[in-house]
Amino acid sequence: MNNLNSGGLSVYTKSTGDALIPTPERTDGVIKSHIEKLTSENSSVWTSPEHNRREYVHSFFQYPAMMVPLVQKKIIDIIKQANPQIKNVIDPFMGSATSLVACMQNGLNCFGQDINPLSLLIGETRTGPYYVNAIKKKTIDLLNKIEEDTSNEVVIKFEGFSKWFKPNVAVELSKIVRAIRQEPRLAIRRFYWVNLAETIRLTSNDRTSTFKLHARSKEEIEARNPSPIKQFKVHLVKSCEDLEAYRDLLLEEDQLSKGAYKGTVNLSLQDSSEKIITPENKHNFFDLLVTSPPYGDNKTTVTYGQHSYLPLQWIDLADIDKKANQDFLKTTMEIDSRSLGGKVRRLSTEEIQFLSSKSVTFRSTYLKLLSTTPNRVNKVLAFFKDLFSVIDRLFDVMKPNSYQVWTIGNRNVGGIEIPNNQILKEFITSSGGILVTQVEREILNKRMPKSNNNSALMNFEDILIFRKIG
Image (cartoon, rainbow, N blue to C red; front, side, top):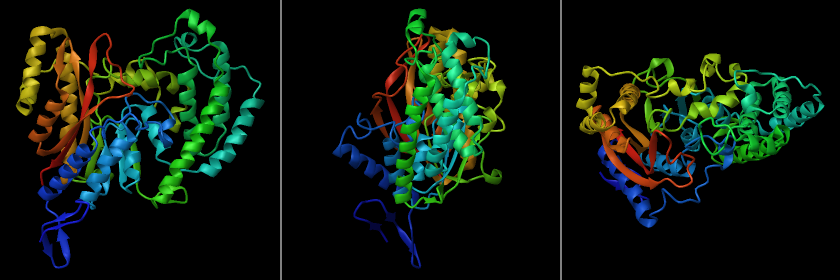
């Protein structure tokens, strides 16, 4: 029996009693046809610059290379409508939790991982609970405490501190920190910490035009006179408004109960190349993956860790996770060193042969780099070894016939294009996946470096949709 609804989003091919059972191949076709239909109707649907990255809770902190929330939601909606049985979603490179926030509107159980403590804090704040009325009342008290604080004591100190913070800025930030620490409720403290992080980004001596820590010129520092307290107040008001707007949206979708999300939200500070966390270490647990991995090692592409270094110095790490500690801040490069490809070493012949057996494109790219820029080969190899480790672990925890949505772009290293998209396809198909469809989108206004001293990023990225063959 075949049954296509008028929207083309429900396909069933046989019945057992009164139950209609969709086949994976038919569901693949529905997903592909609907995406092709949207693309044909509006060629810029995946690219359009009016897509707002800062709507709702995405305004809390300007995180690097953030995915477009509306684009991710369109893809998730299509897959969820094609397969209503989907319940559990994983993002192993969670970043600022853009994909998970989009999944919450569909009532999915959300699981996320990231190696960056600031990423985890942002995710914890964006995914609730949404105690808007309590936060508004508490904020009045918080701001009064800040105004009444007459101490000039600076609450933190680290190597190079004076390079990044003017004395008056450090004093005002310290007043904010002392006030936040007096808030007894952890969820509300986390909300304040994220707003403090954005305040630090805007009032430190670090240039905001780059993700890497790069101090402003002496003349510019002397000319600037930012007030963290004023900046914090302004941003806090905006964040409260956006939190309330998103709470109301989830209420309309009937996804909240007493201010908290009805589904599961489980976020972890975790290196995904080492472990994918599931409840009770279950195999075949996730129905859906939605993610965007780094496009290369973070030291030479998007330095998420450097971008987070200064804010994390001021935040009580114990409020983020019990695994978050000062070891993450040993150097400005520590977090990026813990990310994919961050631990550079020479791969063995056996390891290179193994990866080559999984991707012919990996092999050809390796040989090109070896002949042209041999000094950069190890960085690229380390990245792909870690990426394959993540894929391998994911296939162990993804259900048969589950879907995976990967957003990835290529990059240049030493004048050689690194075809991340094709290598990812081959890694996944060699692991037991099948490519359902893909769309190319132009990167517009995405906070990503177009180039730096070691590499260049391309202007396009692919959204690749796979299914794990059951």
